[in-house]
Length: 389
Figure 1 (cartoon, rainbow, N blue to C red):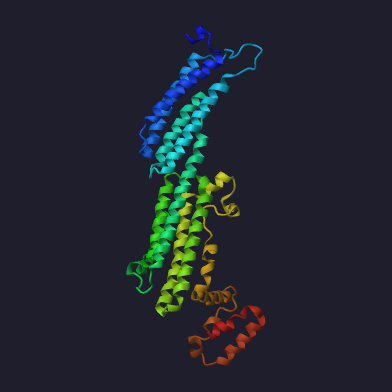
Figure 2 (figure 1 turned 90 degrees about the horizontal axis):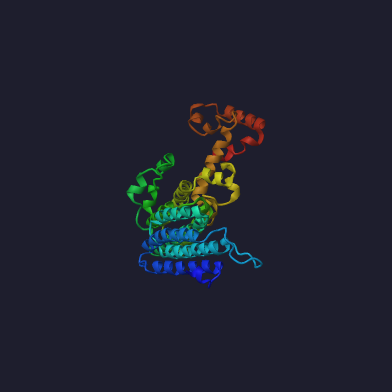
């Protein structure tokens, strides 16, 4: 009847139809319950998928693509300029509602909503409006924001526990008796280091990070590898700062036993917790998958910065001055390994041992040592302090 009345042009008729359908669709969306973000998003996806597709079908059945929208002599207005503009507006509105509800929190059901939204975008590909590529940044921002908040809360909770932590109690028997090298032998199990049970603040911090990892695992795109690693590394640097503040505040009152326990605390953080978190990152973001996405060999991933691996050396550098016994214990081992590389000084480490007591001809050994030092030159120079010790 509107066409017969000749009140609107063909282009105005299309605009009026889309305006009426848009008002009807908005009334349906306004009636959806908005108390639960997950329910609101799920029902919005279902309503938009069904009703938008019906509007598109009705529009294409009423208006022909071949009909001229304006009389001859006026600027041409194509069907795509009106119809696709309206479709893009509806898609943009849906993305805004989706991100707003996801920011409110949907718990651990992010993967379910991602599947529904991807199906919604796939159904629109039949009308030339596939918007699945615009869904990925939305879910990435939401997943990364949730992980960043969880890791920050873990660091804040660690600081609160360190404010009331004392080193008076002895380490727990459970963590001390179970060997910590078992998880490294079985990387598929990813069993947390049991030695962390001796230090409750580190154990609670690791549990909070593992909860964040489990939530991220539900929707974990490879594009988040660098952001997740950077956020986790920042939280670990905060932990290092808290440990240093604890050391500065309590160092003057440390007894000998408390000093030993604090060194064990720092050792557990650097040698057990950090390597375990790196193994967890490699499970979430496999190096082979990252290398395939970048188009480079896995051996060259280190050139691209923090991709699935935190920098343990940078995190532990501020704590280096606290652990002098650990550095001193490594020096004799290195000095003993140097003579083993050459065949000549093999009997040299046994000179101060029982061989000297059994063989009464001590001067002959000294002569042999002088001859070998004259032949080998600087290679035998470390033998002097080794023999003295």
